[in-house]
Length: 104
Image 1 (tube, rainbow, N blue to C red):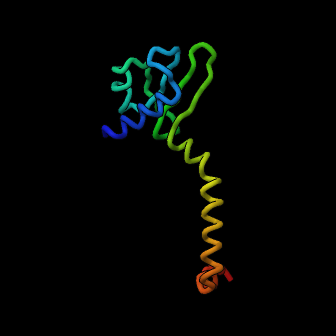
Image 2 (spheres, one colour; image 1 turned 90 degrees about the vertical axis):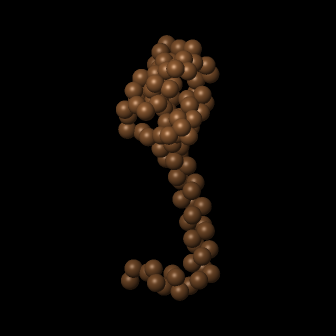
Image 3 (cartoon, one colour; image 1 turned 135 degrees about the horizontal axis):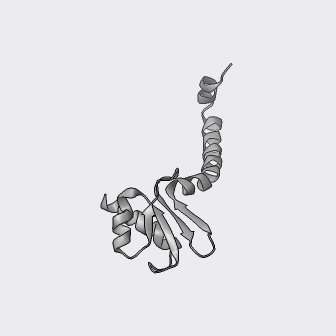
């Protein structure tokens, strides 16, 4: 969709300062043409990550990942910790829930 394309372009712009930068952008197949029209050097990014792009610096070979899946992976420990704290508060307040969830 158009919103998805804009989101991908935003992720690319976070890494690539300008379309004429000396990098190759690997993007979802559905977005290659649109990004190419904007001047980016783009290739089909059929990679294991989803929702974003990989950018490779053609001079030094550095790889930059900017995908939704990568962001979720980095964010997950913090989210899990916050959920555990909140869940513990609920269990302390409503003991009957804790009793129902016990395995033994």
